[in-house]
Each structure stands twice: as structure tokens, then as C-alpha cells.
Length: 56
Image (cartoon, rainbow, N blue to C red):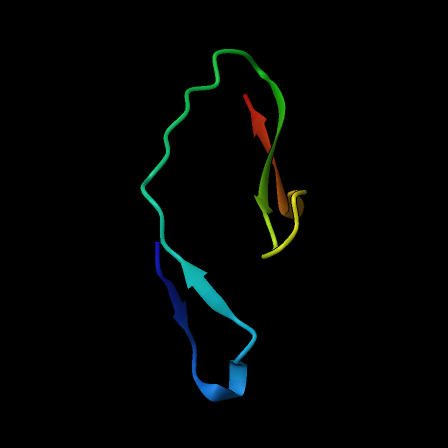
């Protein structure tokens, strides 16, 4: 994967493209999806984003 940087005015922002992921929620409920990253020279992953999905 390759990160795409924005213009210099927004140097701290970037996109990372990945393959599409699909998932079928079989049951009604509230699900939480988390995105984690591992900093260079660290062993632990850190949650950097979280999204709650309500399946009806």
C-alpha cells in the first residue's frame, strides 16, 4: 500500500488505499469497526479510528 499526501498546506493528512472489504451482518445489532496502526519501532497497535454501525 502506498500513502497519498495532500498539498503542503495539509502535510499531516494522507490517504491509504486498500482493497474493498465486504461483510454481511447476519443479526440486528450495534457493531463497532476499529482501524489500528502500528508506529515504526513499536510492537503495539494503536486504535486511530472507530466507527459504530447499526444493523437493522
